[in-house]
Length: 79
Image (cartoon, rainbow, N blue to C red; front, side, top):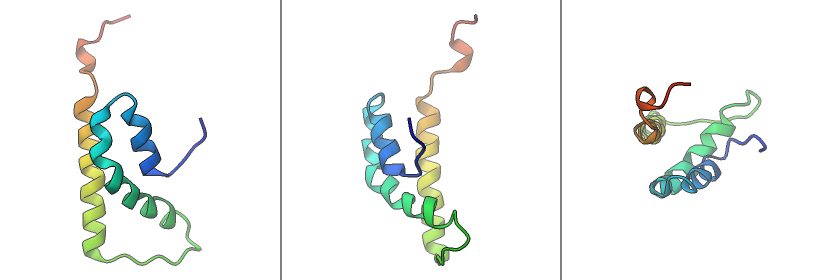
């Protein structure tokens, strides 16, 4: 699989296993802009404090949803 910063693509990929991720398609797409534009110093990218806080809140909600969806590692069989 090739590497990507496209959050919408990654959400859709996760939906194959966890259909409930669909709720993050639109917000994930908005996060992709920040994943790419802010990564490269040559790019001129300005963001307001309000937009930055909203992006962080969105990323946190996706992260927390994924963590809650993972199996409890303590309950997995030990090899």
